Image (cartoon, rainbow, N blue to C red; front, side, top):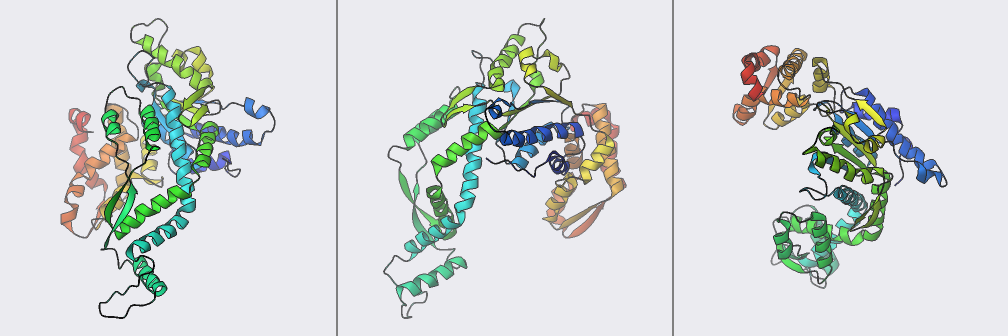
Length: 449
């Protein structure tokens, strides 16, 4: 994978600013980490292998943008991205997932990413090949065609071109044809798949192995558009060089993969505590080799984690980063603190991002011919209510805006199909009328908001 040389730290921060409000320190840290990957690729000789990524710990309350920063960063860099929760993993011998599954899942994400990219390159040719197969079914070669009974038939080539035109114009969409498709059903996999304790990665490998022996096909009757789409996917699969795609996917996972470990604070423990904390420390020690750099066996071959970027995050209300075992602390040299969100931050979140919630709700209601117009004063009132509820109950950050907005627009979302075409301004009085009493009753707000 060739890193984008034009993706400077300043440009990365500017792109993250389109979706995430504030948190400049965290954005700066991940931007530098991403640029260092490109810099490493420019280093020649043995020194390149010695340059390890500088892993990051993000500290901050829930709902301030920790996960979103990592996810948007991965999308920006077209890098394999995996989010896992540290509390889902347990020490070997306890019930839970094996930490090696992090690497296996990351490779699966990488394989899908690369194959989707390769499929995009060949989809045009695949669609043309599928079109020929549909035409072969509709009009077997050597036969003529007329779309009106009683008319003289034309030559085979002319008939085929006439049929091709009708196919492209959608005039054959109601016709059914019989196509031969791969039969993916496997009774053994269906039985094993739902059983507790079955490793899904091992099951996937078993499925691939069994699938290579006597792969079955079945004939299905489908409408022409559906059949065309299914045959296109078959042709895409034939045109992709799967071995090359797999090698590229493993390389990309090793050199560009990003693993986001959420709730890292839930496995932190103080030295003097015992009981359940023994398992927490065990999880840390199991995670250590993965983060330090090790080789994990996957169904695509061995995968090294030496240059995977790990971003850990946690609220750290009950624990501190120093409560992690020293070896793990040492593998996360960069630490950034994300600040709690205030009412002015909420105003920016509701207005500035490309995917702002106000725009999302406006787009949803527009499908029922309802136009809502947000006034700046109403947005300020909403932000004030969200910040106030966060302060009085539990601070869940920007996620509070989801609950407040859903409550505000509840009647409108329910009745929109029956109202008809209307333009409804959202004013401060509209906000106070629907949320005022609810917010004033602290006990009620605690349960509903």
